[in-house]
Length: 89
View 1: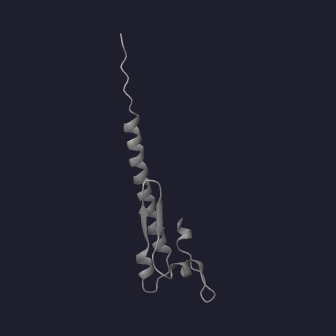
View 2: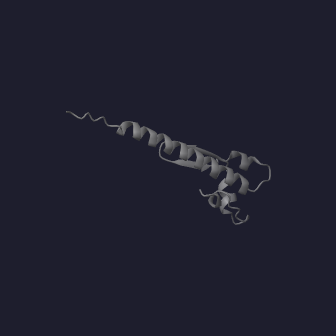
View 3: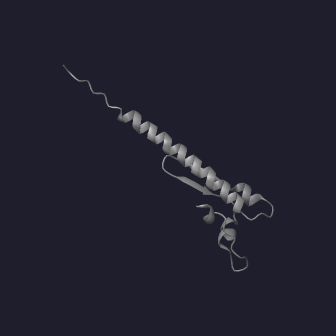
């Protein structure tokens, strides 16, 4: 009598990777939504520019507006109004 063994490791690794990517997408969406809720609004441009990008290993939440850092951290002339850090970024 012989026993046949077939490894399922490759299939398991693919499923784990897919779950990881889905989790990163969900995390990005949740943190992005929270950052948008916490973002101060004047024209809405900053809030609307907040987005998330992910790859297989990480998710990045941010904005490409020139004044985003000044709003988040403040300046010598403007008080800080954090919206990314409190959202979990």
